[in-house]
Image (cartoon, rainbow, N blue to C red; front, top):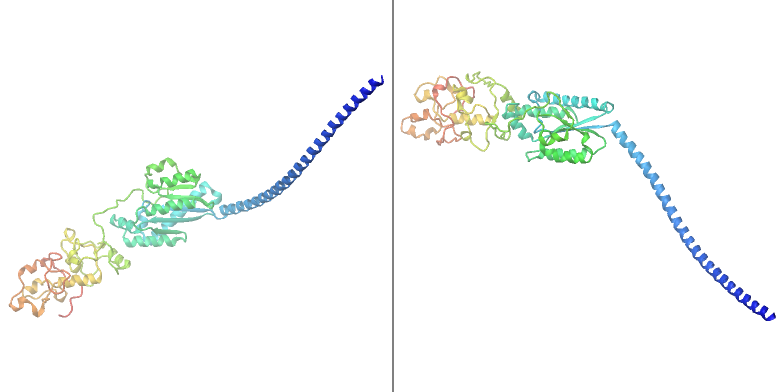
Length: 447
């Protein structure tokens, strides 16, 4: 029995020792895991602190951004409400002002500005009555001034002086109204208008952009860009010609017609009688005075076949002498009377300066007077535009021969720009039977 009890005791002890060893292993494992977890917890706590700090910084930044956004929104709202901009961009080479306005000169320019202002503001009253009263109209017309003026003059719409006065009147109507000369470059006006459309349409204070270029397909790409950006609703088409460019029709833009401001049909760009470039030193006021008034001479004479409304709208080519102009100036018309009237093949519409008249008189004096050439007394006297004295004086070949110039000189007058008596091609044929009245100009000086 004791032996059995001893065996059982040994087994129990072995079992106990095994359990104690397992328990010790479990304790050691638990302790190791606990240490690992503590290290991980410390690491997570440090990360948490970092994230908390980052979150706080982000939250503070968010608050600051919200404050800035509110401030900007308030400023933008102030711009929209207090000073909305009505921008008007007009291609003046296509949207041409009406003849009545252009022919009225300075008054027409101011009236055109007034009609445009009224038309634009009335439109805004209909679409946005709340902001219409506070909006400012900024209007710019871009054009090739010289080319447009030539087209208008050559088509009889207005004179050059009237056009200049119109531009001055328009520009002086408002500080924000201007007609800008872009020069003769190809598509120069288009380039400026396209860039203005791209830039100013994006401005928040721009309430509407009135676009006066519906005649030109070249604006299609710019309008397509604005459409993609969601800005096309700001564009209003300011109609000039009745026919809209084909590629612009699919945009279906709202349009505005202001009656009496623009021409509704295109003008031809060429004309049979183009005026040359004005000579240096010719003032526009002097040109307009001669163009608008009748031919009033000091002597009271006037060409009977020429209307009192004769218009001087052609300049001489400064690079050519008088006898090389096309057509040449009519000697009788400018120095006395031309009985041919409208049938005359020489120019009656040149604007001549005092120097031109002096040259014309000097040239005419080289042709012998019909009466004097027949040894008769000239009924006109010193006022005769033709010569009573030989320009060669004592050196005259015919005088030395005791005779007079051959009769051909009576039908082919030397009226070139030469002053030494050298024969040159004539300016215009002179038939002295046409010379029926006294020249109004001062006769040539003492010889």
